[in-house]
Image (tube, rainbow, N blue to C red; front, side, top):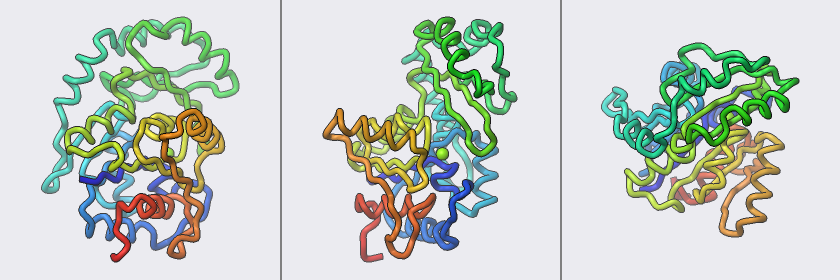
Length: 271
Ligand SMILES: [Mg+2]
């Protein structure tokens, strides 16, 4: 079983300021339908926002959705979503000290952060908007209050589209990386048969976890740097940087996903 896993925003979805190939999404849909490949979306989006993206951009439904930055997993079967309760039990077991409400209390007095709307929160995802100008000071204060106390990971990212700093507290066992590892294991795919495509911040974890990585051409400079550093430290890491010029595609967004999938022979060349 081969798995093609991809981030959504500005990786599969052309919602950044780079130009996109108009035919790339229909190519992606056709190629993945024809080939024996499991399609997994690994995204910060919740279910509602994922369905919105599917409708807005015309990308196909995935076979599996690792949503809410990996804190939820759903299969899409026979036209309906099936929530993976096993993932919830697994995370609770693996991160016993995790408590969203305890983290909420711990950071309640921190200036410059604002809790995100309820649809962006769940039992494994406690998230905030951050005053990006002051992020260094804020993150330092938060580390002192939270770090290492709740089996958590603290992920900060900057949304270049709307200038917002975003802060996620997640159980260490429920991230984009661990969710994809869980799916790969369930479907019996070896790590080298899993391709993960990304463009920014929190994609660093699955890109450096031993899967076959792909950076779309529009990937953040900082992510490119971090991935290159990780590759220098670990010669076994395989990450492909989409550059465009493949089958007339430009390498941005969906085109970079297709280019990367061919690079790792996820799609065979004949089709
Ligand atoms: Mg993205």
